[in-house]
Length: 310
Image (cartoon, helix red, strand yellow):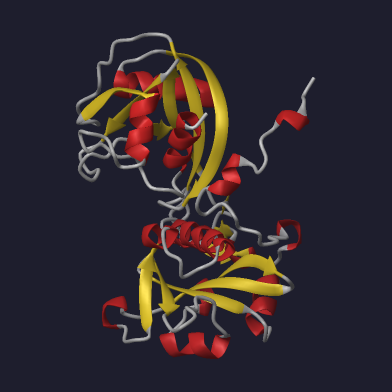
């Protein structure tokens, strides 16, 4: 029996960054006219992108969705626009612009997506839509040619498919599944730190799911490859859209069945056991050795905090 009454509320996935995208995508009704209808509609609102960053207008109330007459001042490439979906009968569209973000003048500025995650300048719904847009725009840039015959491909159905005019091959946007996990054993957990982490920062382990692999087996494999510990039972916790460039982070807990850590030094510079009490100190930034955990909104933080406060 599946007891839905025991599921946590709110959903853990709704508490992480980029997760509150409430756009109606209406994918089954997309055709070659929908993007043109959106571009012609007076109530359509646009996100402007340049070099992987999104443009903002910083005033007393920051603006990130704009009317078409504002967008037209930034040399938009409407032929590359992507129809993200609809919010309250208002279409939201992402459009790349030929603008030098280094020369923007006040009140204009730009944010990369990682900075946007921790910014208070946009709503949770806007952040989710921008993550969607960032992943889609990157996918288009890296799939300009047919993978079968090499012919330049063409954007179709509002940006959600690319077709080859020569051989007819169709390609759809991809999402890469990534397991991100906290291996635990009783009152302690395993965390590691990569060389690029800020000083003292320890976090969860992570890795891509490989072809022909279940999520559970991917967690067991990646945990062993990075830390040398063995994992038995696996429990799902939450997921997070992660537009770097187009991943879905699948947050998991794993029951450790061994004790010895033998880390992969090519990926980690440190990996160790931490007790629950130590992790609580790290969350409060009170650990005597200066160790800290990732900030809120990242799913790694959600996994760590949920376990520590259990």
